[in-house]
Length: 253
Image (tube, rainbow, N blue to C red; front, side, top):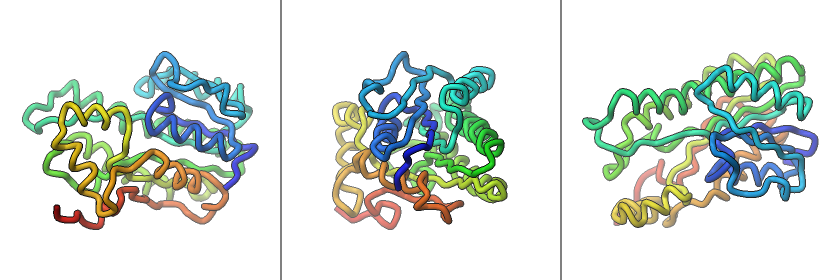
């Protein structure tokens, strides 16, 4: 699972799950191009011990994305892997969803994922020696939790999983592998905020998974590193749920 000599593009990499994936790839020896809309990442990338550069970009704007990927190819010389971790969520009643909000969800979660994967795959095709793309889906694309109201968010993540299956077949002739992971309840700044705003929901994060706890970002990084590395050379078209067993059935409280 060593990634020395490989360049990985990670969108949404300035914070949360995305930043943990950046650190994990660096720990495995891989260089990292970090993309996000924030002014700067939450941690100093110069301390990762590898070549790591930050590109402030917007995954909903194609011209900006194209310019960003051109810069990455110039700076790193190649793109071997891509992880699409950029995403937004709306937890609210189906009846309260509004057009502009839903359009934004679709642009970030679906179109942003699609075109980042496309630009990375174009670079991999031109290089001629394959690559790996990992799309970040969600447990919300598999099932619903009564206390959460994720109708449009779940729909966008369902689109991401279907996209993965289609691309895994279409890109296979170029040895470009495409897989996805579907995280369940993971401890991030967002879920920690939920502890104060929706304590009843936060309680579910810890009690619903059969394994008996909320997930940590470290529970995701090992799986993603596997999918990016040569250890997964024969793995494509797979979605891996990382849910503490939630996808298999909730334990009654």
